[in-house]
Length: 328
Image (cartoon, rainbow, N blue to C red; front, side, top):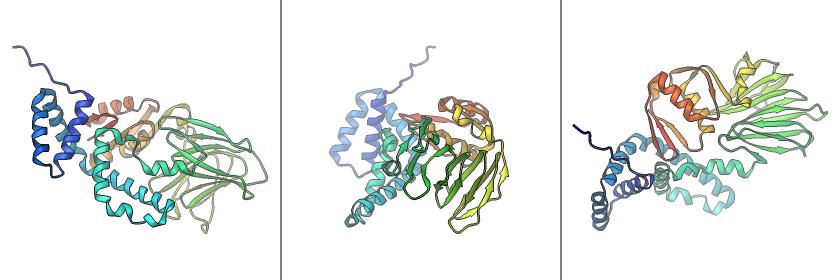
């Protein structure tokens, strides 16, 4: 018996289905309902697209709303900085903004709707795009290699060579000078005269890894410095530093050559890295899967291949919607 041909909606039909889904969740008029019914019956692909949209909506509503809330908070900060008189403007329509941002994220347009990134970039001197590894030479001939989706601000006017890491990570090859070279990240900083090291922002702080030379790391301006040598690493958060420890710094810094190396890292941490290399959104929904440990070496330039490889080992599911990938 011949199997029925599978109906595959187009991307435009998928986006229209999500638009209808959002409208129907927001007290539609009788005219809207009639127009939707006509659209749904006009093409079997429309019904298939809407059925898929309902499934994906159930999977992504909570995380998409969380992302929308984060974006709303970032946008409020932006408006506060631009115009104090608008201090409460976002709060007045935060629910509507969250719903709109949720829908934008779901239909794919939201891949670029990230006010927090815009704010980082507005105050930055050098920026790398998602998936881009970029090396820049500073005024003192020091070099900074930015990991994907990273941003730094540079100020050499205060008697020291000062760099603020605003997003992502940077590998610093510092030339010798009488002026200290300071990298600020969150509340802490790494201070050197000449060396090679990485500073990487983390969800609750930052991490410093030294390839050569010595680096003094403080978790906040009043904290005591820890002196790191080649092959050592320390992380800090909320003004408190962890104990420094030895690492394979060459392996940790292999992203400069396009490789992401992990040893017993959680899947959540791996996904966090992949998000910087993927031009859209990657949303991980399975908390149990997020805690699974991963070891291996993966090509950073092909995040989809990494996801496929991890899927084969861990057995999670992937769902794609435009530029968004949902993992569960």
